[in-house]
Length: 97
Image 1 (cartoon, rainbow, N blue to C red):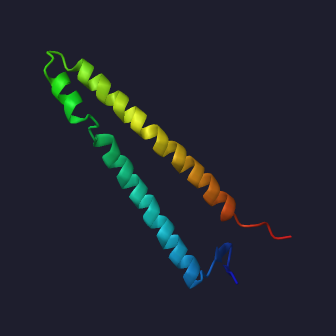
Image 2 (image 1 turned 120 degrees about the vertical axis):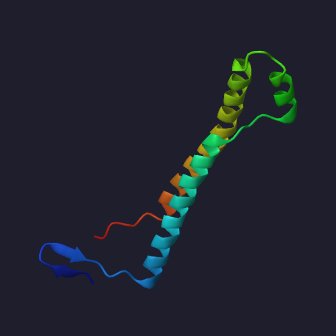
């Protein structure tokens, strides 16, 4: 039951709602840290690195590294998007009539 103080509405959350809010907050923090460290990673395998480091210019090595990171990221983005759609579909609050 919400309390009304002037124009502000104070909502008293149940223990279950507070724990769900804390879990959601932790997931968001984990996602942000994962994205930050994902951007910094090098994705070359040992053989690709050995062949490309023997060249004079490092532009080819940088281009191949960027391509590997791009190809690695697409499946995670797709699975994350599908997971979000399924999550939203199952945990959507139903409108009260």
